[in-house]
Image (cartoon, rainbow, N blue to C red; front, side):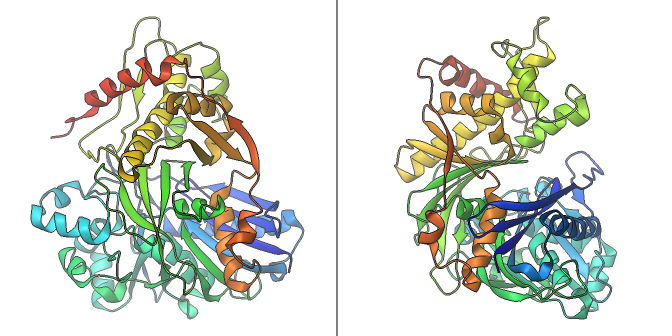
Length: 499
């Protein structure tokens, strides 16, 4: 069996990518899905639409690769992490739209928690008190959706992050689908204790969530079940890897050693630092999270800095403002001017994540003059991606007491060479892009392959990593000095926008 598949279900699209044993892509298919925005600050997805898209991309990728599902050794799943869905196990249908990680509707509920309760949650989970995470979303669905409340009462409700929804469907759905999640996704819910790696009774009580609706927590690399012959793979293929998208990118970048880090540029932006088997609690606004757990091996932990809006800011320029017609056009538009013309853009559309954690913040564009053009705004949007990354990595260095000398990067925006050069200039360190930038899907494939023996061990995976390009910082660039100072001023303008 020379192939392995990865189902990569992201915030804006779903993909199925097929890799050979060398980690090269031999077939892939991708479909976007709807972004449902019922109110300001609310973001939802249709879980049924996502599953239909996953069926399409699996069959499409197999066709492009010229192989059958039975040719796959196994498949892994990686997913947008905190996005939460509750479905009816008797009908197989969602009981409400999924509430997306970007959604801020639960801010008031969280703000009302006592300081003592907040401290307990933060200590047990390593996370921040923010609408970003799953627990308050589940609480909202239970309290605000009569269909959800009734299904829980009748014993029909299953809840989870998107990985558990996909796994349940792939393994049979109403005809016996398994209801599991992995430690990386569970660690993003505000419900799992970092030490026990299990749902915590006190946290479940705080959020008023019945344990029985939640998925059983497994490792990130083991055989959870097999796909059904009646499903899109038309074969019984082991499903043997599950990782939240950012942890999957860590595995895809082969960051298995203490102190290794990567930064992924997607809808949002996420930097992780491997802290080994130690739980390092941040003092600078970062999250403590699971990095991965392979089978019976000890869990590995990480520090994470999360930025809500990076790639989605480019989508905003395209879809809401119409100043570009495709995302790649932003690079040429930004290159048409030599600087940002004094314009700074902070895309705090759903508040600020790390290291600020301010759900009251909203986006701003500052420094406008009559001379400002759409090209200056495009350049400011790319700079915003890089400045937000520096905010996170500065915090990471402060927590770890280790000065970063280079960063490994991945995700779609890394194909934008202007942005990556800006990133090197703003950080003052080397930025290294691998040959395969789709490391999220690759990491899910690696996790699946480790469980089935397709790959021998992590040292084999490390030997496969290849550098594509290294961006060297311009030490004389004003982006790292005056530019970053002005960025900090712009951040101040976003705060206290919401009462």
